[in-house]
Length: 92
Image 1 (tube, helix red, strand yellow):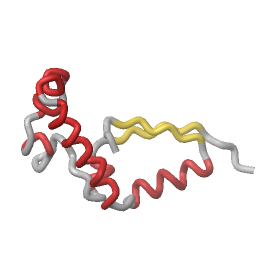
Image 2 (cartoon, rainbow, N blue to C red; image 1 turned 90 degrees about the horizontal axis):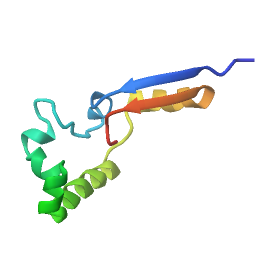
Image 3 (spheres, one colour; image 1 turned 180 degrees about the horizontal axis):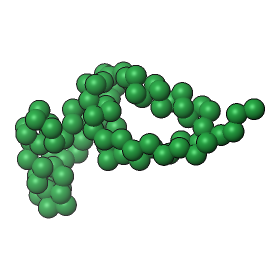
Image 4 (cartoon, one colour; image 1 turned 60 degrees about the vertical axis):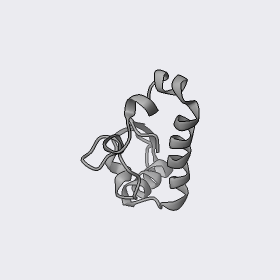
């Protein structure tokens, strides 16, 4: 009988980029196209909450158009046999 291991996985933006989910800070990242101060700050939200909500709603909608990649699938398989905690800075 296999003993369940406790495994911690640290991920970053790259894990989902392969699936077509844009990152924020790489050379083609979201913050090269949009002003982070207007979309990722309390002041930006206070100034224009509708713009912030539309930006993040568009990102959530994008998740309906992409598929998990090999890394996502491997982590899902690992979770079936071990106690896996995934720590990420991603929103995906």
